[in-house]
Image (cartoon, rainbow, N blue to C red):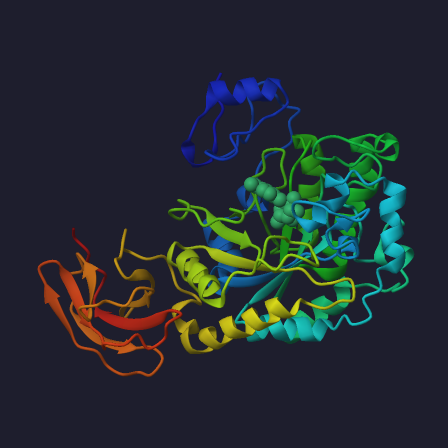
Length: 468
Ligand code: JFZ
Protein backbone atom coordinates (compact mmCIF):
# COMPACT_ATOMS: atom_id res chain seq x y z
CA UNK A 1 0.00 0.00 0.00
CA UNK A 2 1.43 3.38 -0.98
CA UNK A 3 0.63 6.76 0.41
CA UNK A 4 1.19 9.70 -1.87
CA UNK A 5 2.67 12.70 -0.18
CA UNK A 6 3.02 16.27 -1.27
CA UNK A 7 5.93 17.03 -3.58
CA UNK A 8 5.74 13.48 -4.87
CA UNK A 9 7.47 11.80 -1.93
CA UNK A 10 6.22 8.48 -0.67
CA UNK A 11 6.73 6.97 2.72
CA UNK A 12 4.48 3.96 2.65
CA UNK A 13 5.48 1.41 5.21
CA UNK A 14 6.51 3.76 7.97
CA UNK A 15 3.43 5.91 7.69
CA UNK A 16 1.15 2.92 7.46
CA UNK A 17 2.35 1.45 10.71
CA UNK A 18 2.04 4.83 12.41
CA UNK A 19 -1.45 5.26 10.99
CA UNK A 20 -2.51 1.97 12.48
CA UNK A 21 -1.26 3.20 15.83
CA UNK A 22 -3.26 6.36 15.36
CA UNK A 23 -0.04 8.33 15.25
CA UNK A 24 0.13 9.24 11.59
CA UNK A 25 3.16 11.41 11.17
CA UNK A 26 6.37 11.64 9.24
CA UNK A 27 6.69 14.89 11.07
CA UNK A 28 10.21 16.12 10.98
CA UNK A 29 11.51 14.64 7.78
CA UNK A 30 8.68 14.44 5.28
CA UNK A 31 5.45 15.93 4.12
CA UNK A 32 2.14 14.55 5.17
CA UNK A 33 -0.16 12.10 3.39
CA UNK A 34 -3.07 13.61 1.53
CA UNK A 35 -5.28 10.59 1.40
CA UNK A 36 -4.43 7.29 2.97
CA UNK A 37 -5.64 4.50 0.74
CA UNK A 38 -8.32 2.52 2.54
CA UNK A 39 -8.58 5.15 5.27
CA UNK A 40 -11.31 7.29 3.81
CA UNK A 41 -12.45 8.34 7.27
CA UNK A 42 -9.28 10.34 7.84
CA UNK A 43 -9.80 14.06 7.45
CA UNK A 44 -8.03 15.88 4.65
CA UNK A 45 -4.46 16.79 5.49
CA UNK A 46 -2.39 19.83 5.10
CA UNK A 47 -2.62 23.46 5.97
CA UNK A 48 -4.98 25.78 4.22
CA UNK A 49 -1.97 26.17 1.98
CA UNK A 50 -1.70 22.57 1.03
CA UNK A 51 -5.41 22.24 0.54
CA UNK A 52 -6.48 25.19 -1.54
CA UNK A 53 -3.66 27.51 -2.45
CA UNK A 54 -1.47 27.90 -5.50
CA UNK A 55 2.26 28.48 -4.90
CA UNK A 56 1.73 32.10 -6.02
CA UNK A 57 -1.06 32.62 -3.50
CA UNK A 58 1.11 31.10 -0.81
CA UNK A 59 4.01 33.42 -1.69
CA UNK A 60 1.66 36.36 -1.52
CA UNK A 61 0.32 35.26 1.88
CA UNK A 62 3.84 34.69 3.30
CA UNK A 63 5.32 37.89 1.83
CA UNK A 64 5.16 40.21 4.86
CA UNK A 65 6.41 37.48 7.18
CA UNK A 66 9.37 36.58 4.95
CA UNK A 67 10.39 40.23 4.77
CA UNK A 68 9.87 40.96 8.46
CA UNK A 69 12.70 38.76 9.81
CA UNK A 70 12.44 39.92 13.41
CA UNK A 71 9.54 39.65 15.84
CA UNK A 72 8.72 39.89 19.53
CA UNK A 73 7.40 36.85 21.39
CA UNK A 74 5.54 37.66 24.60
CA UNK A 75 4.90 35.01 27.26
CA UNK A 76 2.53 36.49 29.78
CA UNK A 77 0.05 35.01 32.19
CA UNK A 78 -0.78 34.11 35.77
CA UNK A 79 2.60 32.36 36.14
CA UNK A 80 4.16 35.82 36.36
CA UNK A 81 2.68 36.03 39.87
CA UNK A 82 4.67 33.13 41.43
CA UNK A 83 7.49 34.22 39.08
CA UNK A 84 9.42 31.00 39.61
CA UNK A 85 8.86 30.43 43.35
CA UNK A 86 6.30 28.09 44.93
CA UNK A 87 5.90 27.19 48.59
CA UNK A 88 9.10 29.09 49.40
CA UNK A 89 11.14 27.10 46.90
CA UNK A 90 12.64 28.22 43.63
CA UNK A 91 11.24 25.85 41.01
CA UNK A 92 13.74 24.77 38.36
CA UNK A 93 12.96 25.18 34.67
CA UNK A 94 11.00 27.63 32.58
CA UNK A 95 8.72 29.91 34.56
CA UNK A 96 5.47 29.32 32.66
CA UNK A 97 5.71 25.61 33.53
CA UNK A 98 5.72 26.17 37.30
CA UNK A 99 2.27 24.64 37.81
CA UNK A 100 3.30 21.43 36.07
CA UNK A 101 6.83 21.27 37.52
CA UNK A 102 5.71 21.82 41.09
CA UNK A 103 2.46 19.84 40.63
CA UNK A 104 0.46 22.73 42.02
CA UNK A 105 -3.20 21.74 42.50
CA UNK A 106 -5.63 23.61 40.22
CA UNK A 107 -7.44 25.20 43.13
CA UNK A 108 -4.18 26.53 44.55
CA UNK A 109 -2.83 27.76 41.22
CA UNK A 110 -6.09 29.55 40.47
CA UNK A 111 -5.55 31.72 43.54
CA UNK A 112 -2.70 33.46 41.73
CA UNK A 113 -5.22 34.98 39.33
CA UNK A 114 -6.77 36.83 42.26
CA UNK A 115 -3.60 38.90 42.56
CA UNK A 116 -2.85 39.14 38.84
CA UNK A 117 -3.51 42.85 38.41
CA UNK A 118 -1.30 44.35 35.70
CA UNK A 119 -2.17 47.98 36.36
CA UNK A 120 1.11 49.14 34.77
CA UNK A 121 0.30 47.38 31.49
CA UNK A 122 0.85 49.87 28.67
CA UNK A 123 0.25 48.09 25.37
CA UNK A 124 1.38 51.09 23.37
CA UNK A 125 4.70 51.14 25.24
CA UNK A 126 5.19 47.44 24.40
CA UNK A 127 4.40 48.02 20.74
CA UNK A 128 6.68 51.07 20.72
CA UNK A 129 9.50 49.00 22.24
CA UNK A 130 9.09 46.25 19.62
CA UNK A 131 9.09 48.90 16.93
CA UNK A 132 12.15 50.62 18.38
CA UNK A 133 13.99 47.28 18.46
CA UNK A 134 13.37 46.94 14.74
CA UNK A 135 10.83 44.16 15.17
CA UNK A 136 8.08 43.91 12.59
CA UNK A 137 5.62 41.64 14.40
CA UNK A 138 4.46 40.56 17.81
CA UNK A 139 3.20 37.14 18.92
CA UNK A 140 1.68 36.98 22.41
CA UNK A 141 0.41 34.01 24.42
CA UNK A 142 -3.38 34.32 24.33
CA UNK A 143 -3.51 31.12 26.41
CA UNK A 144 -0.53 29.10 27.59
CA UNK A 145 -0.47 25.55 29.01
CA UNK A 146 -1.98 26.72 32.30
CA UNK A 147 -5.15 27.34 30.29
CA UNK A 148 -5.54 30.95 31.44
CA UNK A 149 -7.05 33.10 28.68
CA UNK A 150 -5.77 36.67 28.41
CA UNK A 151 -8.98 37.53 26.55
CA UNK A 152 -12.66 37.40 27.48
CA UNK A 153 -14.14 34.03 26.59
CA UNK A 154 -17.52 32.38 26.90
CA UNK A 155 -15.89 28.94 26.93
CA UNK A 156 -14.29 29.09 30.39
CA UNK A 157 -14.31 31.23 33.51
CA UNK A 158 -10.52 30.80 33.69
CA UNK A 159 -9.77 34.09 31.93
CA UNK A 160 -8.57 37.59 32.69
CA UNK A 161 -12.03 39.15 32.83
CA UNK A 162 -13.71 36.59 35.09
CA UNK A 163 -10.81 35.46 37.29
CA UNK A 164 -8.68 38.55 38.01
CA UNK A 165 -9.13 41.92 39.72
CA UNK A 166 -7.93 43.56 36.49
CA UNK A 167 -11.07 42.36 34.76
CA UNK A 168 -10.29 43.57 31.23
CA UNK A 169 -9.16 42.14 27.92
CA UNK A 170 -5.36 42.16 27.58
CA UNK A 171 -5.20 41.05 23.94
CA UNK A 172 -7.41 43.58 22.16
CA UNK A 173 -5.51 46.69 23.32
CA UNK A 174 -2.17 45.19 22.27
CA UNK A 175 -3.61 44.19 18.91
CA UNK A 176 -4.67 47.80 18.36
CA UNK A 177 -1.40 49.27 19.64
CA UNK A 178 0.70 46.94 17.47
CA UNK A 179 -1.24 47.72 14.33
CA UNK A 180 -1.08 51.45 15.06
CA UNK A 181 2.70 51.11 15.07
CA UNK A 182 2.67 49.25 11.77
CA UNK A 183 3.42 45.89 13.36
CA UNK A 184 1.77 42.63 12.45
CA UNK A 185 -0.01 41.03 15.38
CA UNK A 186 -0.05 37.31 16.11
CA UNK A 187 -1.38 35.01 18.79
CA UNK A 188 0.06 31.93 20.47
CA UNK A 189 -2.58 29.44 21.63
CA UNK A 190 -1.88 26.22 23.57
CA UNK A 191 -4.43 23.99 21.89
CA UNK A 192 -3.53 20.65 23.47
CA UNK A 193 -2.02 21.21 26.89
CA UNK A 194 -4.37 22.87 29.33
CA UNK A 195 -3.82 22.18 33.01
CA UNK A 196 -6.86 24.00 34.40
CA UNK A 197 -9.67 23.42 31.94
CA UNK A 198 -10.74 19.81 32.55
CA UNK A 199 -9.70 17.30 29.90
CA UNK A 200 -6.78 19.31 28.58
CA UNK A 201 -3.55 17.42 28.03
CA UNK A 202 -0.61 17.63 30.44
CA UNK A 203 2.97 16.64 29.72
CA UNK A 204 3.89 13.96 32.24
CA UNK A 205 0.21 13.21 32.92
CA UNK A 206 -2.47 14.78 35.11
CA UNK A 207 -1.79 15.43 38.81
CA UNK A 208 -5.15 16.82 39.91
CA UNK A 209 -8.44 14.95 39.67
CA UNK A 210 -10.14 18.04 38.24
CA UNK A 211 -7.96 17.60 35.15
CA UNK A 212 -9.40 14.10 34.66
CA UNK A 213 -13.02 15.09 35.13
CA UNK A 214 -13.54 15.46 31.36
CA UNK A 215 -12.08 13.77 28.30
CA UNK A 216 -9.68 15.46 25.94
CA UNK A 217 -12.35 15.37 23.22
CA UNK A 218 -14.74 17.19 25.54
CA UNK A 219 -12.02 19.76 26.22
CA UNK A 220 -11.36 20.24 22.51
CA UNK A 221 -15.07 20.74 21.78
CA UNK A 222 -15.92 22.87 24.83
CA UNK A 223 -12.80 25.00 25.21
CA UNK A 224 -10.19 24.86 22.45
CA UNK A 225 -12.51 25.06 19.45
CA UNK A 226 -14.72 27.87 20.80
CA UNK A 227 -11.73 29.87 22.05
CA UNK A 228 -9.82 29.58 18.80
CA UNK A 229 -12.98 30.66 17.03
CA UNK A 230 -13.23 33.64 19.39
CA UNK A 231 -9.67 34.80 18.91
CA UNK A 232 -9.65 34.33 15.14
CA UNK A 233 -12.86 36.26 14.64
CA UNK A 234 -12.28 38.95 17.26
CA UNK A 235 -8.59 39.77 16.70
CA UNK A 236 -7.94 38.46 13.18
CA UNK A 237 -4.33 37.60 14.09
CA UNK A 238 -1.71 37.58 11.33
CA UNK A 239 -0.09 34.53 12.97
CA UNK A 240 -1.59 31.67 14.93
CA UNK A 241 1.21 29.96 16.86
CA UNK A 242 0.16 26.49 18.05
CA UNK A 243 2.21 24.67 20.65
CA UNK A 244 3.08 21.24 22.04
CA UNK A 245 0.65 18.89 20.24
CA UNK A 246 0.47 16.49 23.19
CA UNK A 247 -2.29 13.91 22.60
CA UNK A 248 -3.46 15.64 19.45
CA UNK A 249 -4.68 13.33 16.70
CA UNK A 250 -5.91 14.04 13.16
CA UNK A 251 -9.53 14.35 14.27
CA UNK A 252 -8.83 16.86 17.06
CA UNK A 253 -6.38 18.82 14.93
CA UNK A 254 -8.81 19.03 12.02
CA UNK A 255 -11.46 20.66 14.23
CA UNK A 256 -8.99 23.46 14.90
CA UNK A 257 -7.52 23.67 11.41
CA UNK A 258 -11.00 24.04 9.97
CA UNK A 259 -11.37 27.33 11.86
CA UNK A 260 -8.47 28.98 10.03
CA UNK A 261 -10.79 30.04 7.22
CA UNK A 262 -12.27 32.53 9.71
CA UNK A 263 -9.02 34.49 9.43
CA UNK A 264 -7.96 34.63 5.78
CA UNK A 265 -4.23 34.93 5.30
CA UNK A 266 -3.31 33.71 8.78
CA UNK A 267 0.11 32.09 9.02
CA UNK A 268 0.41 29.03 11.25
CA UNK A 269 3.37 27.09 12.58
CA UNK A 270 4.10 23.37 12.60
CA UNK A 271 2.90 22.61 16.12
CA UNK A 272 -0.80 21.89 15.63
CA UNK A 273 -0.27 18.15 15.53
CA UNK A 274 -2.41 15.50 13.84
CA UNK A 275 -0.03 15.46 10.89
CA UNK A 276 -0.41 19.08 9.85
CA UNK A 277 2.76 20.85 8.84
CA UNK A 278 1.52 24.44 8.88
CA UNK A 279 3.53 27.19 7.25
CA UNK A 280 6.64 27.45 9.40
CA UNK A 281 9.22 25.28 11.13
CA UNK A 282 9.95 26.42 14.68
CA UNK A 283 13.40 25.47 15.97
CA UNK A 284 13.37 26.44 19.60
CA UNK A 285 16.25 27.96 21.60
CA UNK A 286 18.63 26.99 18.81
CA UNK A 287 19.77 28.10 15.39
CA UNK A 288 19.93 25.25 12.89
CA UNK A 289 23.28 24.61 11.19
CA UNK A 290 21.66 25.35 7.83
CA UNK A 291 18.21 26.61 6.89
CA UNK A 292 15.33 24.32 5.86
CA UNK A 293 14.82 23.20 2.28
CA UNK A 294 11.50 24.49 0.91
CA UNK A 295 10.22 25.48 4.35
CA UNK A 296 9.85 28.84 6.00
CA UNK A 297 11.28 28.84 9.49
CA UNK A 298 11.56 30.88 12.64
CA UNK A 299 13.86 30.39 15.62
CA UNK A 300 12.20 31.38 18.87
CA UNK A 301 14.47 32.19 21.77
CA UNK A 302 14.56 33.67 25.25
CA UNK A 303 16.79 36.58 26.30
CA UNK A 304 17.49 34.90 29.66
CA UNK A 305 16.61 31.31 30.57
CA UNK A 306 12.82 31.48 30.75
CA UNK A 307 9.83 32.44 28.59
CA UNK A 308 7.47 33.39 31.42
CA UNK A 309 8.78 35.86 34.02
CA UNK A 310 11.02 34.50 36.80
CA UNK A 311 12.05 37.12 39.32
CA UNK A 312 15.55 35.69 39.87
CA UNK A 313 16.65 34.70 36.36
CA UNK A 314 19.37 37.22 35.51
CA UNK A 315 21.12 35.04 32.93
CA UNK A 316 20.80 37.60 30.14
CA UNK A 317 22.31 37.29 26.70
CA UNK A 318 24.37 40.30 25.63
CA UNK A 319 23.22 42.73 22.96
CA UNK A 320 26.11 41.62 20.77
CA UNK A 321 25.05 38.00 21.13
CA UNK A 322 21.43 38.85 20.23
CA UNK A 323 22.39 40.89 17.15
CA UNK A 324 24.75 38.15 15.98
CA UNK A 325 22.06 35.53 16.48
CA UNK A 326 19.70 37.62 14.37
CA UNK A 327 22.37 37.89 11.66
CA UNK A 328 23.09 34.16 11.82
CA UNK A 329 19.40 33.27 11.49
CA UNK A 330 18.71 35.71 8.67
CA UNK A 331 21.83 34.54 6.79
CA UNK A 332 20.24 31.09 6.77
CA UNK A 333 16.88 32.37 5.53
CA UNK A 334 14.98 32.31 8.82
CA UNK A 335 13.14 34.68 11.15
CA UNK A 336 13.98 35.48 14.78
CA UNK A 337 11.16 35.56 17.33
CA UNK A 338 12.77 36.95 20.47
CA UNK A 339 10.93 36.60 23.76
CA UNK A 340 10.08 38.92 26.61
CA UNK A 341 8.36 37.80 29.82
CA UNK A 342 6.47 40.68 31.45
CA UNK A 343 5.80 40.85 35.20
CA UNK A 344 2.39 40.52 36.82
CA UNK A 345 2.31 44.31 37.05
CA UNK A 346 2.54 44.48 33.28
CA UNK A 347 6.15 45.57 32.89
CA UNK A 348 8.73 44.18 30.51
CA UNK A 349 11.88 43.56 32.60
CA UNK A 350 14.36 46.42 32.42
CA UNK A 351 17.19 44.12 31.24
CA UNK A 352 15.05 43.19 28.21
CA UNK A 353 14.13 46.80 27.52
CA UNK A 354 17.79 47.88 27.56
CA UNK A 355 18.88 45.13 25.19
CA UNK A 356 16.01 45.67 22.79
CA UNK A 357 16.81 49.38 22.59
CA UNK A 358 20.45 48.56 21.85
CA UNK A 359 19.47 46.03 19.19
CA UNK A 360 17.25 48.78 17.78
CA UNK A 361 20.17 51.17 17.51
CA UNK A 362 22.03 48.61 15.43
CA UNK A 363 18.93 47.89 13.33
CA UNK A 364 18.35 51.56 12.61
CA UNK A 365 21.74 51.74 10.92
CA UNK A 366 21.90 48.24 9.49
CA UNK A 367 18.31 47.11 8.96
CA UNK A 368 18.76 47.24 5.21
CA UNK A 369 21.00 44.15 5.58
CA UNK A 370 18.24 42.27 7.42
CA UNK A 371 14.73 43.12 6.15
CA UNK A 372 13.54 41.47 2.96
CA UNK A 373 16.86 39.73 2.43
CA UNK A 374 17.39 36.10 1.51
CA UNK A 375 19.93 33.51 2.65
CA UNK A 376 23.67 33.70 2.08
CA UNK A 377 24.89 32.14 -1.17
CA UNK A 378 28.11 31.03 0.56
CA UNK A 379 28.45 27.77 2.48
CA UNK A 380 31.02 29.33 4.82
CA UNK A 381 32.66 32.70 5.37
CA UNK A 382 35.69 33.21 7.60
CA UNK A 383 34.60 36.63 8.82
CA UNK A 384 30.95 36.06 9.71
CA UNK A 385 27.70 35.89 7.76
CA UNK A 386 26.06 37.27 4.63
CA UNK A 387 22.59 38.09 3.33
CA UNK A 388 21.52 39.05 -0.17
CA UNK A 389 18.94 40.89 -2.23
CA UNK A 390 18.40 39.90 -5.83
CA UNK A 391 16.71 42.37 -8.17
CA UNK A 392 16.37 42.74 -11.92
CA UNK A 393 19.33 45.12 -11.80
CA UNK A 394 21.71 42.77 -10.02
CA UNK A 395 22.59 41.25 -6.70
CA UNK A 396 23.48 43.02 -3.48
CA UNK A 397 25.40 41.18 -0.80
CA UNK A 398 25.48 42.36 2.80
CA UNK A 399 28.55 41.09 4.60
CA UNK A 400 27.84 40.78 8.31
CA UNK A 401 31.31 40.92 9.79
CA UNK A 402 31.76 39.34 13.24
CA UNK A 403 35.54 38.82 13.11
CA UNK A 404 37.39 41.80 11.71
CA UNK A 405 40.22 40.62 9.42
CA UNK A 406 43.76 41.20 10.73
CA UNK A 407 45.05 41.55 7.17
CA UNK A 408 42.32 44.02 6.27
CA UNK A 409 40.80 41.74 3.63
CA UNK A 410 37.38 40.10 3.46
CA UNK A 411 37.36 37.09 1.13
CA UNK A 412 34.21 36.09 -0.74
CA UNK A 413 35.24 32.61 -1.83
CA UNK A 414 34.44 31.55 -5.39
CA UNK A 415 32.65 34.79 -6.28
CA UNK A 416 33.26 35.63 -9.97
CA UNK A 417 31.11 38.76 -10.43
CA UNK A 418 32.53 42.20 -11.04
CA UNK A 419 31.79 44.54 -8.16
CA UNK A 420 29.92 47.78 -8.90
CA UNK A 421 30.31 49.31 -5.45
CA UNK A 422 31.45 48.23 -2.00
CA UNK A 423 30.70 50.44 1.01
CA UNK A 424 30.46 50.46 4.76
CA UNK A 425 26.69 50.45 5.18
CA UNK A 426 26.78 52.69 8.26
CA UNK A 427 28.69 55.57 6.68
CA UNK A 428 28.59 54.97 2.94
CA UNK A 429 32.42 55.10 2.87
CA UNK A 430 33.56 53.25 -0.20
CA UNK A 431 35.92 50.29 -0.09
CA UNK A 432 38.22 48.94 -2.77
CA UNK A 433 37.81 45.44 -4.15
CA UNK A 434 39.52 43.13 -6.59
CA UNK A 435 38.81 39.82 -8.28
CA UNK A 436 41.36 37.12 -7.43
CA UNK A 437 41.53 33.43 -8.38
CA UNK A 438 40.05 32.59 -5.01
CA UNK A 439 37.18 35.07 -5.31
CA UNK A 440 36.36 38.69 -4.60
CA UNK A 441 38.50 40.47 -2.01
CA UNK A 442 37.15 43.55 -0.20
CA UNK A 443 39.70 45.79 1.53
CA UNK A 444 38.55 47.25 4.84
CA UNK A 445 39.99 49.73 7.38
CA UNK A 446 42.24 48.54 10.20
CA UNK A 447 39.73 49.15 12.97
CA UNK A 448 36.33 47.46 13.15
CA UNK A 449 33.85 50.37 12.92
CA UNK A 450 31.00 48.61 14.75
CA UNK A 451 32.21 45.95 17.20
CA UNK A 452 28.72 44.40 17.42
CA UNK A 453 28.52 43.54 13.72
CA UNK A 454 29.91 45.71 10.92
CA UNK A 455 28.00 45.55 7.64
CA UNK A 456 29.70 45.86 4.26
CA UNK A 457 27.38 46.35 1.29
CA UNK A 458 28.60 44.90 -1.99
CA UNK A 459 26.68 45.56 -5.20
CA UNK A 460 27.48 43.07 -7.94
CA UNK A 461 27.10 43.40 -11.68
CA UNK A 462 24.87 40.79 -13.29
CA UNK A 463 23.46 37.55 -11.94
CA UNK A 464 25.24 35.96 -9.01
CA UNK A 465 28.13 33.80 -10.19
CA UNK A 466 29.85 31.59 -7.66
CA UNK A 467 32.11 28.67 -8.60
CA UNK A 468 34.24 26.79 -6.11
C1 JFZ B 1 6.94 25.19 24.27
C2 JFZ B 1 6.27 25.53 25.57
O1 JFZ B 1 6.09 24.37 26.34
C3 JFZ B 1 7.09 26.56 26.31
O2 JFZ B 1 6.48 26.89 27.52
C4 JFZ B 1 7.21 27.80 25.45
O3 JFZ B 1 5.94 28.35 25.21
C5 JFZ B 1 7.87 27.43 24.14
C6 JFZ B 1 7.92 28.57 23.16
O4 JFZ B 1 7.19 26.34 23.49
O5 JFZ B 1 8.06 24.39 24.54
C7 JFZ B 1 8.61 23.61 23.60
C8 JFZ B 1 7.98 23.33 22.41
C9 JFZ B 1 8.64 22.58 21.44
C10 JFZ B 1 9.91 22.12 21.68
C11 JFZ B 1 10.53 22.37 22.87
C12 JFZ B 1 9.87 23.11 23.84
N1 JFZ B 1 10.59 21.42 20.69
O6 JFZ B 1 10.06 21.24 19.57
O7 JFZ B 1 11.76 21.04 20.92
